[in-house]
Image (cartoon, rainbow, N blue to C red):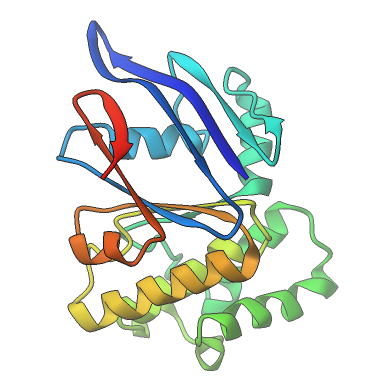
Amino acid sequence: MLEVRGLAKSFGSTPLFEAVSFDVAPGELVALVGESGSGKSTLLNILAGLERPDAGIVRLGGEAVALDDDEALALWRRKDVGFVFQAFHLLPYLAVSENVALPLALNGVPSGERPARVLGALQAVGMARFAGRKPGTLSGGEAQRVAIARSVVHGPRLLLADEPTGNLDEANAALVLETLRSEVKRSGAAGLLVTHSPVAAASADRVLRLSGRHLAPA
């Protein structure tokens, strides 16, 4: 599903990483690990279309991603990418169901189709009973499961997660990781998880390590 070939990124004259190449199959969750400052989050941001690489090619479902076209990247990110952040980023003044519906509105899904899709996404992560609640009334683990529902409701082909358990206790972290893994497999998306946690990395199907400007199996 995801093909990355020869990605490179420098800041000024300092290389961050170079010649990064890997694949992620449909329904596979791959963990990306490495020391702080190794470039993990930068690599994730490039794959999300939030930053540009200095070199390299990214393909999703066999289609090349226009990494040098801001407008095309924005459209691609909105349609094909789901992103789970460490800090949840739920809008506090919207109900859970309204937060999850946002990607559908941005993608022009007719309003009549949205409730069923939102309910399906919330049911998949075990959060349907909280649909009418505000994010401020949720625990950290509950909020992160809502964030996962929001990230998958529009059917992205690429699901990215940046330290999704960083703010959670052990029990909630385990539940969120299982939810993330299940959603990747259910949807058939390519999943990439950036983490410092050995426990989180162990939940993935495969682990890659970014170190010394290069990527290799851990």
